[in-house]
Length: 427
Image 1 (cartoon, rainbow, N blue to C red):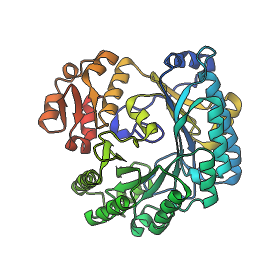
Image 2 (cartoon, one colour):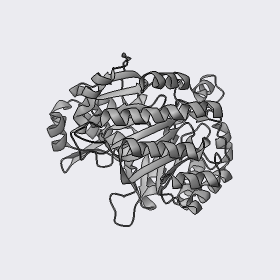
Image 3 (cartoon, one colour):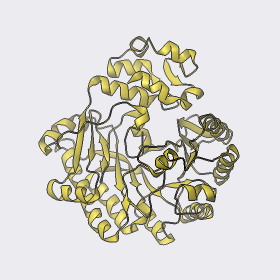
Image 4 (tube, rainbow, N blue to C red):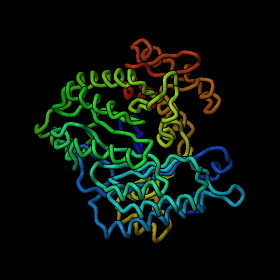
């Protein structure tokens, strides 16, 4: 699952079907079931699309930064926050309970801290946001100053997710990143000195021309810095990106699958030795000695993998209420116009069948270290996994990709690396 709630193409064959945007009354009926569960906490994702420059591998919904456009966009986001807060919070149930806010992009750190503070404030006014909520901002190194950092902390932003991607300058240049390795190090030091106690670092493995020595250096540098969380991704070359075009034209070599597999093994071994909880295929949270479950696992990202509700605000943002998925208008200007007219900007919506829900819960749950409880899955979805997938599970087990132990179905170390090959069996 991507940071904004999108299911990556490699994880499912199904794409959202385009439907007419729904009317407010209809949507209130479709989501009212959630409000009955007062103990369930949802998450809010806020999309800030602005970037100085698009990275070669990026297929996220971004646009060039403009102060004038940002000045129009932020009020639209505020209006959409208020719309959903009012719509989802019924008169008998009160405001929807929230325990995570994730401000992603794009480059959220490119806009003024006062603008981001206003967004967080409006979330707290429109939703029942827990006092100890995880409030994350995505940061590109060198795209901000110390006064901005102080502004984020004052606004209640308490977690920083830093898109380092590499500590090697030539790799950063090849990715069209706008920072250097030393600027990334300085950024992480600045955040720590300013008072951030929860920092996550993103790195990418399997880049064209990247050697195992390069990846070992990146891993060693990240672990030396010692962030609370690591997101270590294997490169996915997505159609439509600059990198895809470069590889197709022979300007860059295609990533080596065997070498990438070795890099994944290296990251698992290195993070394990450094006492990180490898709780999801690409995510690692620092743990104290003896801790099997780190308290530093990302609250927000866990919602994507456990099927909890999350509400996407902003252009191209995706949402899920447990029964349906919907996505906002992609283009920034169209989003602003739609919110001005309707209060929301829904462009596509998909009602999930019971089979869809079960399939998604299965392959999303398997992304986690704990996998799925077979008994709980049967109780929730009425599906006996062992019986339903009796044609595929023995083959996957024999290949060493899955295992069943203690009533739980989990991926093995090899299965995590080849997860897409496993998941396709459940779609």
